[in-house]
Length: 336
Image (cartoon, rainbow, N blue to C red; front, side):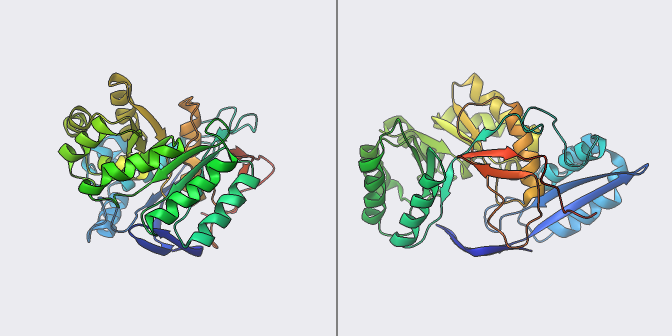
């Protein structure tokens, strides 16, 4: 159970803890680890048979990764954990999954500073801290407090920083109704925002398509991608909605293979994309960060900082000047 340092607010409620499971592989003296983390009420594999499925995976690990991934199509977080565990086992070091200039400490990944929901003062304090820390891209979760108060916060940032100085993203997590969404998008667009994530609830493809066509503000699909298991289902979303961006959370959409499929579709449809972590521990974040760096995206990514929890694992990952970096002098304290 990962414990939050402070309750973290989303439009779906306040989080104080998060469950996660780890798959350990061992053979010929080598070890590998992968994280299977679900987000209750959001992950499509938040099911009663989740732990039983994990137990089945452990008993049938001899089937190999390719077969297991096929059988686990409805369990994207377990797919991600397995992909990571096998990659970890086959690597020279269990935490060096995708060696690169990033893991060598020679390159960094630009990330957005995440502003959690809360009262106006709490959100304002977070914004000030992120700006002081050197972030030039801020993502603010909206939809929990009064909309006018949220607009006031965005206005206060824009009065001090232009769009060329600070990129602003907002995430509604499906908080708007369809009837009010376009009006709210119009008002938000006054502040030169980069994009808004998931303005209305997922599963309303025709309504989302109408918003994406009429919006004055680029829309990014997030929750909409969850549960689209097949290429046919993914193509349907792309063809109907025609979004400006999609956001990829490997733990929620089938790991690296699932993310690769979405990226190919995005490129074929001239749709932008970026990668986001989903409140994993540093084990999962490490895997996602290393994978993300190899994609060569220049956009700020939505990667967590590892600093949310009181009981996270020490790792080489660190945030500096609005980027995620790999400090080789910092060691892991994860014990198999």
